[in-house]
Length: 486
Image 1 (cartoon, rainbow, N blue to C red):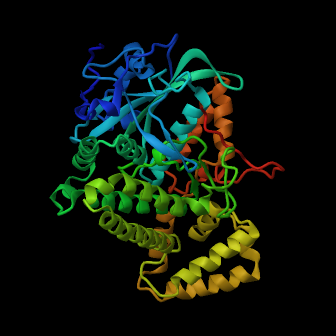
Image 2 (cartoon, helix red, strand yellow):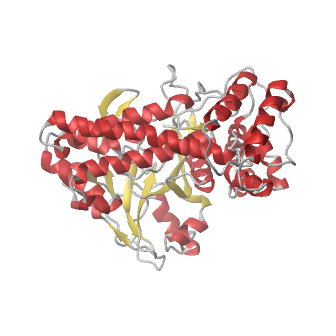
Image 3 (spheres, one colour):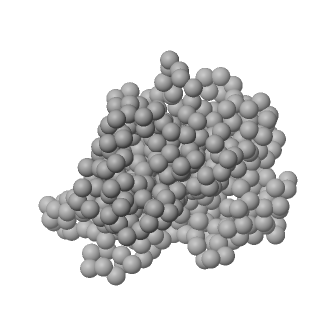
């Protein structure tokens, strides 16, 4: 146990649950831990001393070689539907070292990913490669800067060991923080135990940690479902508005807190196309960009199934109550999406023709293969380069209608432009830029990675420095593919 003045204030409320929900684990030391990248801003918000954590004793904790005072390392058990098939799972290569109590009194999970084997490793080595861990660091921090709820990355530590995949790769451990790691799959696991007391304990824990107001409801467990559905509707709308493709929306990758989690095969869309898929294993396009809202609903239906015994003693009545909430999820998502699109177009008020205006623009973008981010970026900034789409007669006709619509609201042109700049990022983590940074980091050059992180830190700044990072990738005869990184 490491005692140091780093600022650790770790607790382990998760161990108050029945022990069927977790397994105690011990640190799995690595050979030669070396800090690769560290998030000073996040550390300070957690009440941690960045300089202490960067020292040898601090890096030992981030590598899993030592446990800080107050830590009670564990691996969580859960299940999930993976591409529609149910399977028992768990933290196969991660351990929760504890819950940091921040200076603001918030409780934040601190988890090491790639920290070695656990009882849930299912034959795997429990380790992770440097590239995928840096990828999660880049994308999760970009998502945070974009204002999208997400787990965050505190550090990546190289292990000094080789991780064997299709080829030998340098190993690494990611330190990830989250509001919690409770998943829809955690509830599916509890339901599969056929132990109502255990399911109730888990639901009560989730309510106490994330939705304390639900405890005052006439039906706390229905209120829990409603709150989770509302947060997921808002989250997935933010994904769609940013052109983000998660890539692996299994139920074990859907949090109860409403944060984005697990950045394996994710990527941001370039040319607008609802059928966009990046994941190499998503052959059928189950998790394509355009399918994400409906998959969110499908996952919520699985959550509802797990909660039914708690919601009402009559299963049929419980199902009716949940069905009403699922329909509300659809309406909530559509409302969040429409409001977000209005903001992207500088619209403060509501008019009945707004959906048609938005749909017409998206239809043109799809037909002409227009870049999603840069189209809205150009609409938001007179200084941005004009996409080829803007030269078409269809667009000019649409633009005239849009300008007329802007003129019917009380807000002036500058107010509308400011709303658009706040709603349309100048930069996103372009896939080719991420790959460029990972390749350089793999060769020991971190300057490309650090420049990219600096540019992504304020995606709405519209600075000249960001211009070079706004360009889509050069044409290729091969589609971009992502991998789970396991």
